[in-house]
Image (tube, rainbow, N blue to C red; front, side, top):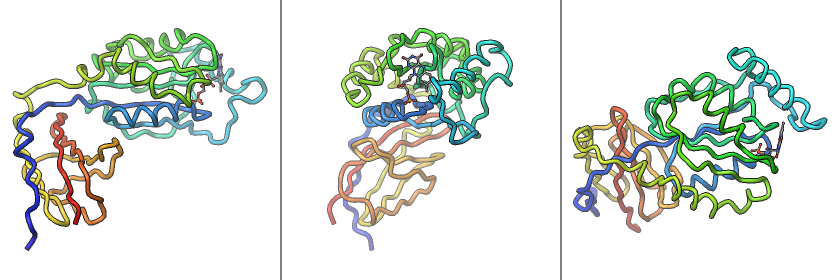
Length: 270
Ligand SMILES: Cc1cc2nc3c(=O)[nH]c(=O)nc-3n(C[C@H](O)[C@H](O)[C@H](O)COP(=O)(O)O)c2cc1C
């Protein structure tokens, strides 16, 4: 028989509903990718990386000729889908998210073309969502990129300020990101208490046994993160094997009907 080690629900009486965040980004030379990787250590968010359908293109070759041509096509006819380069199919349900962080490289004063393709298709589904912008350039100012986002997400609730990270600052972006998160009031914006709408998921308990945790209650899916913010797994099972998980504090994010609650639990040393 399994030994009951910890019942954590007792100390988790407060139900706070964390708004769910999506970080959507494109990165050609991986500066934005590195910024997003750092950002992920500071907030809980799902990640969506946009990839062009045509692989192996060097957008920077010949004085950025290919990238320049793509931007030129969009500038000439921004309302036509055919102006935007094809991207790989994406699997995202935007209705799950209250906050979307758009992280974009700057190309010739504009948003990198593949990310514009994504926003051209999905921007209208971001109505009334909080939109926060991170932009990286070598040196050019970012207002054109923000302008692209506002054109492509016409009814987004854009947060200020935007975060501008020059290429030279990428390897040292930790402080820039944490200061920026404070300046947009990220914690308050993404932590709302909607008890009336969440009562149906507020009574979930986590029972930690020796080699597994049992989840009592109903939910659509649960994501388990370690304390550093790394996602270990996502499942809809009520029993999760923990044999391969080292002891420590973990956070479970339960989702149901578009709402989310988080609960901490501990796996003790065996
Ligand atoms: C096609 C292309 C055009 C660019 N145009 C500019 C520019 O006009 N001004 C600038 O400061 N940086 C420009 N850059 C540099 C990128 O904005 C910068 O290196 C950024 O950090 C790249 O992000 P990434 O590594 O995530 O792709 C350009 C880069 C490319 C590939």
